[in-house]
Image (tube, rainbow, N blue to C red):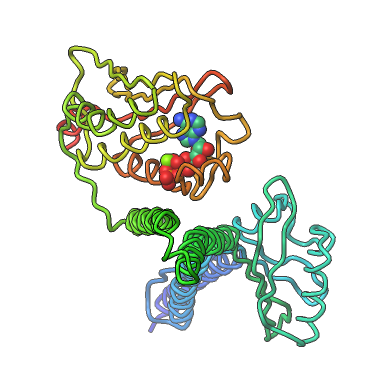
Length: 423
Ligand SMILES: Nc1ncnc2c1ncn2[C@@H]1O[C@H](COP(=O)(O)OP(=O)(O)OP(=O)(O)O)[C@@H](O)[C@H]1O
Ligand SMILES: [Mg+2]
């Protein structure tokens, strides 16, 4: 080997080691860049170092770590989003408070229920919502006394009744989970049911008592006096009929409310229904001295509905008009068409209904003058049956009245043509 060969070999070795050093330092730079971006939260970054040396191995390990983190974080994000969507969709209000009673998490339903602002998180729940019962509940729950739900009343423009259940949260972050369920509607329905039972029993009791006392009087001697006997038999008959109609009305109403009553949706010509109903009442109207008439326009479109239900509705309204109007009054059944709707109107020139009673006449058992109504055989169920039936036919019922001038009941129904278009 000559000196020249030696020199060339050294130069080659130096060049090769220089290149290797440059490759190593570029790999280190690339690894550092990847590590920095990972620390900044960009988990999509990869080193992808070529080769099989130790640095390339390290690069691949770093890439695997980034890949693993990206998958795990994605799963955690999806889980967190799902939980957030569940909390947002819940009708129940949910709030989590820490050991000091500060709000950690609150869902939109509870924000709306307690009228909490957007900045509620981090504040003390009891300072944000000043409520004595809630205060006691939180105290007891944090001391682990009681975990039974407590019903509280939330005041405000629309007061609400809310059932609150507090459960302790264990783990690193101790606190309380409070779930609020709005039971206002439930309590309203319960009270309606209680009122219904009370009213129904009261209504049934009156005629039953009359029948009982009449039979007792008959037994204790009136039976032997023909005139008195007939009078008491009349009382029994009248009250038995009243009981029968009361029970029928209650059954009808219960069928309507349980949706067991299926109304048909067929074409009904009012020109056919109105005369049938009027004929039923003509004699009674004449006897009472009230004028009963109908005025239907020549080309009245057919309505969507159930002919039997429509007869029932109209009968109830005409029956009321005859019952509550004095001798000499006029009752008119008319109809008109407007905007795809047909209005069937029963108006009278009777005593009218005072404004404070108007919104309530469609309630079950509601009577303007209970004594007078009962005298004429009313139970206060007629108009609530009318309302249910009209609504079952997708219609609307309303009343307009002026005391001393008369009342107008308006039934608004769909034109039959719109049924065909909808089907
Ligand atoms: N045309 C009317 N004029 C004056 N008051 C009326 C008229 N229609 C109804 N009312 C009042 O509205 C109340 C409720 O009527 P509704 O038909 O529901 O009950 P009712 O006639 O007393 O009993 P029912 O119809 O069950 O026999 C009546 O008690 C009566 O006071
Ligand atoms: Mg009635």
